Image (cartoon, rainbow, N blue to C red; front, top):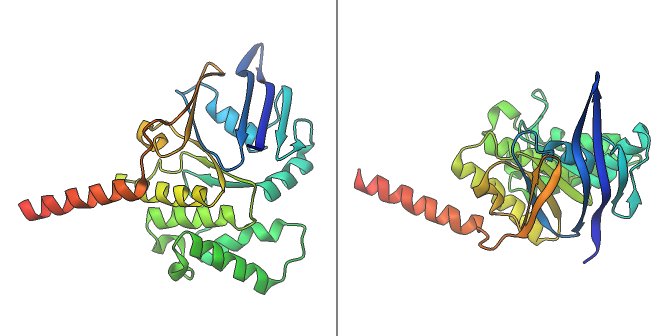
Length: 253
């Protein structure tokens, strides 16, 4: 399997006054194209720092990071910004949508920062296609306050996809959602992954991690476990079970 991510002896040390905080310690790992990985760990484990490094939001203190064949370890701020825009789609817990613009306009936004001269109608067509992928094209003209939490997250996923990135990074993408909506969002991720998109997700929820294919657990800045998911959950099947249970409750009441 071709690696999209290759980390070699990555350290991240934050200098705070007289104390050095060693957030990531000698981490080496590979993530192949088409994988679906959950990075987990308690507060202070280093998982958020790891996500920032993988997303080119921060640079390692030491070590080498190859992203889709490009060594990003020593790139400057502008070069990192360019890599983020070209190679990575971000999905956050808080959605981060612009409140006064429509779903379609929110999805179009990343294309305005690309160096390619894309015409407005091409941007619109690509944004519509991204909304179609997440099953929300009929809500293209709605503003975020007219959408449910799950619909807002679908818009955020479409926005992350619109520049056709090498991978998606999702930071606690179900943290603000109820159980059913969380399963629906994991269904979107599973569908995207089945189509070949690489997804790396930070989560503290064991049940959500069970929808991925591989779980990496961190503690004190180190990887302490890296295993394939043995009994992977299917979002389609879990939604079916949940709806059957809801119907049973309604019939009994």
